[in-house]
Image 1 (cartoon, protein in one colour):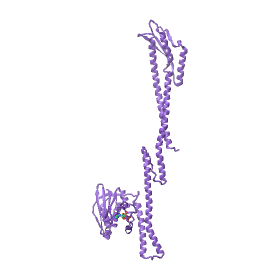
Image 2: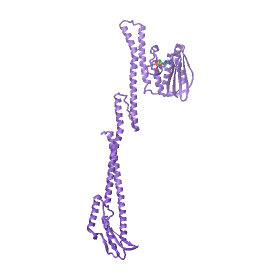
Image 3: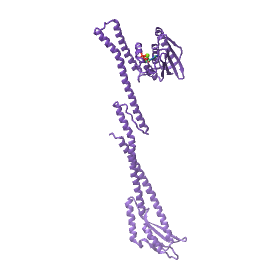
Image 4: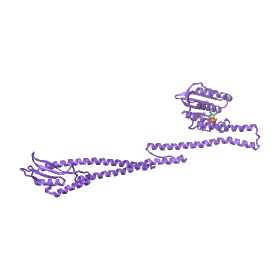
Length: 461
Ligand code: ATP
Ligand code: MG
């Protein structure tokens, strides 16, 4: 059966405290009682010695005794549960508690046994008599016999002291329980409140409400981590959701243009407004090619972007890669009458060769695409600490300041009308950025409109 955290914690606290209080009470009770008993036994001894001494002092001279003095001591002793019997040197009884007042003696004895048996059922007191010699001026003058319940008994003061002690222990126990209950409840509140908030937030997130943020100030590390994780989850789901929406919008936007062109062309042909000349058919064919390319691009995007970009790391010569790319582009550069310059170098990197090649191809093809006849494209390669740097610089049309921050976004093309002829989809740089990011590298751009563009890629070696 599942229990609520608050309940569970409160009960756990209570349980622990009950056990602690019980153990402490039992132990303290046991030790205090023992200490007290020893103290009482010691006390008895001292009292007996005192009686022996003061009775000894009641001897006057020549066998005479201060009987009144002995009587006074004897009476007080009876009250204290001690019954004395004084004999002189010849063995003659001078004063005896029981002879003096047997009724009082019995009364006191009964009182002692009753109260002891009542409060201490395990008490095994036996009436014992101890004999002591009476000494005066270092000579024996008689004997005294002190009878009492041994090894110990408690007087009414002692019993009320023990009662108070027990009451106090009980009070401390009840008080600790109360504190434990309050503390446990507060602690459980403190723990469960942020957790309940996290549950609420997680529920909101599961319903698609990603903006829900948990605001709790807690000094509990785990709860703090839990809330930050849930908040981060919300943020990242929010990002993903936005991305998904934008991607769908971008894709449908990209698909709509060639599809509507095709649709209007076809309708004109069907209605006989247009003759199906080879030029018209070619234009339709071009739109179909555009669509096909777009689908291919989307495929590429799915492959290179996002979490599923896995790298195959090998050690290769980046200079050689650039050399090969330049050779492959040679013809296209010649056709467009754009100069291509690059320095032969040999720098080895540990990276995914195919994907890095793809990045450089994208940059070089952009440079060629956006550079007019007579312009120049330069590819440079150098090392900087732990990084290999590839730089693709052109003297082309450049990118305006407001477009620069967006060129790495998918389907982004700086100037729609201008790019119509160049026919790109605007994903080349998005792919390049994903690849470089996966390599933990950096790609940056500097550009001036009508002057040229400069792309720099920093790859960890
Ligand atoms: P694709 O590469 O998908 O065929 P694309 O070249 O248009 O299409 P990207 O490579 O992502 O797309 O580039 C995005 C935009 O950035 C381009 O449309 C262009 O406007 C601008 N751009 C990129 N490189 C350059 C450059 N070297 N000079 C001027 N503008 C550039
Ligand atoms: Mg491109």
